[in-house]
Image (tube, rainbow, N blue to C red; front, side, top):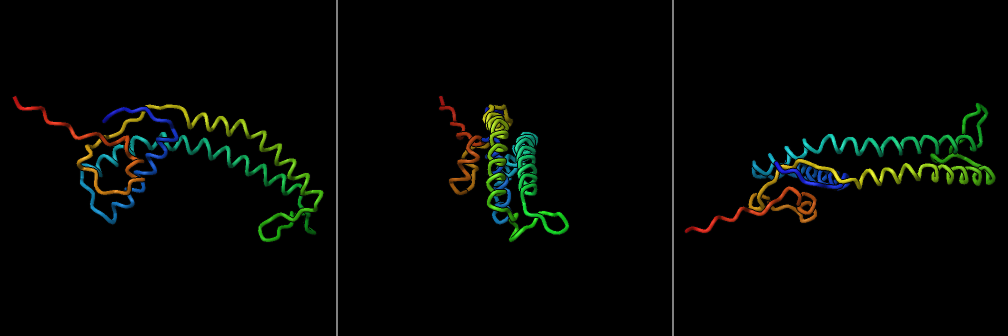
Length: 163
């Protein structure tokens, strides 16, 4: 195991690349040491990835909830007082649509700081334990995936010169 420094966003990308490789390994047989390294690293990344995704998810859920409340408030109501929809879109008068757009613009400004905080959070550098493998046991994988797991790969140790 080696401890490396990554941004949270890079840790998320590493986790995604490993998960893609795990799905690919069902069709191909990868060397046991390589699979072991993938599994160990993914387990170490699990908590970090979970906290990163939850932070973004809560912000987006709150934004979407409030956006829908604005649309429902300004939508034309049916005889039961419920907002009318046409093809999954709220039905609004021109005037109500303008009011809703203005309110949503204000909502976006309100959430801008949350989005900025989220970006700042994702750009924080963290220490992550990865199980590194020598390049000689890395199977033939697409270069985009190879780039995604490059933090896990080390050069093969060079043999010491014989005396």
